[in-house]
Length: 159
Image 1 (spheres, helix red, strand yellow):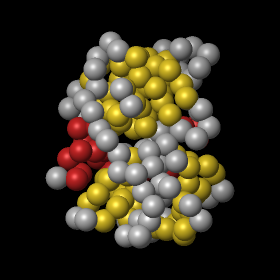
Image 2: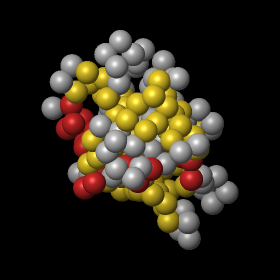
Image 3: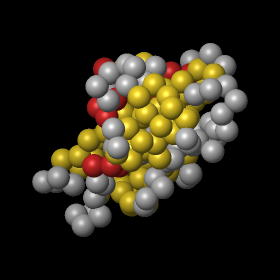
Image 4: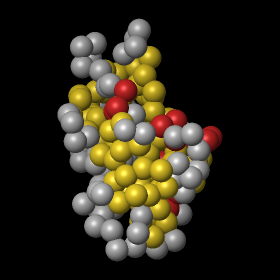
């Protein structure tokens, strides 16, 4: 089953599905676009060969249309709660963090110095109360701050 936190492979690297949404009645995977060169890039998820359908450069998001008969779990979204704990989750690990600030399109996260996301974690969902509040997009290593694309943007895609 394809769901938030599942793995896919692109150019021999393990990558992470940030969310699964329904768009015009079809299931789509969402992850960060900086993993790809552009629309048409190939990837593999659950043994299926797929292509990047759409890149939203303004938000660092990539949309990948899934076959309509795919086994998926549509992602539940929530609004970030500032100064509360959160978790970066994928098939490899769970990393604790704290939401330090939140805006209309970005969520800022604080990670513990020795428990930081790794390069393969880009696009991983950030959860609070078991609902996705954003997708990790970047890190600043010298101050352990991460930037996530807000669930506000992800929810608006379904609109």
